[in-house]
Length: 198
Image (cartoon, rainbow, N blue to C red):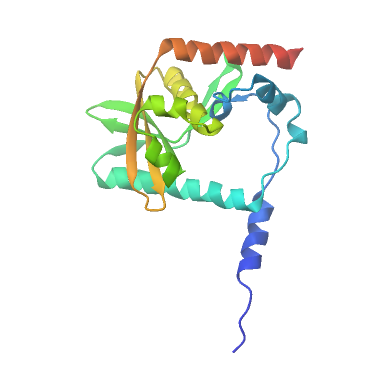
């Protein structure tokens, strides 16, 4: 009996999912990026952006699986999960985003962002300050994303539910809304909007 290639078709199918989409607004998931020029270019020169490779597409898909895993774990633990992938839009700041979900506890809802992280990054994160100390731009930017969702939803407390890969062990890191931090993000978005219009 002959063997046959099952991997190449999988890669080819993944490649078909990689697309470049127009970006005409600020995205909450990018708002924590330290380079304002980069954020302006994301909106004004989005068509010049390089497409990510198939390896990163597998990682993105893994992130979606981790999010579903987190929902199931929390539900199995007795929590109610609501408003999965709730879209947000804040016209004044030309800002959009999608919150992963909210968790309901004692009549209150809390925004939740799920992040799958490699074991080295996971092990370095124990409190919100550790995000800001990270050498990785995307990890430093996570608190801005959650803070914006909290602002848009008028919540004082949100949580990162992070999962370690491999192993998938979870950890919760809470974010108390810091209005000075949030205001700095909004001022940055105003500057970006101004540059986009120039």
